[in-house]
Length: 198
Picture 1: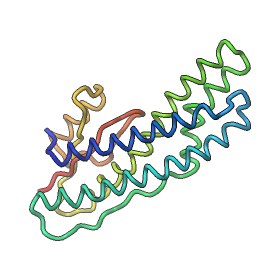
Picture 2: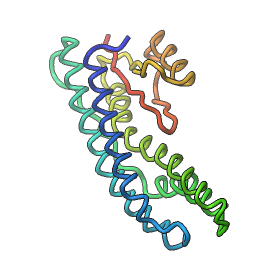
Picture 3: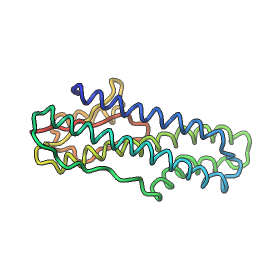
């Protein structure tokens, strides 16, 4: 079961996710999806700014959380924090093309399909974007925990109604935190990580 610091951190990360979704939702209606060749690169450029800002916030929040958890565990001194870097442009472009571009492209000019395709593209791409944003905090925690000689590993902090995938990973990490090396997250995932110290 997650401690108070871990629960508070997860809630703070979810606020970053909510802000990211609001920003994406505000941006979406301004894109003319009827001309994908022109619209997609413009949209990617705008989304890139949203991802960079919110990922940086997720990373900064995780760094402060790591310092607080180490202090709460009674460990003196500070471990070097391994801050997650930005999302590579090619990774962001590919994620957005797969989750949004392909669906809109498949609908083509058929008006009967276009509205549904665009709506589905928003849902899929928003999941990918929020995963990339929150990965900033997740990677900061996992990389720092891996490098910290006082850390055993990390446990997964889930919501009460998380999916089976996350529930299974959380159960494995709780049994043996040292086995949890990378944080696996799906699109729309709201899980976080809690360092475990020995």
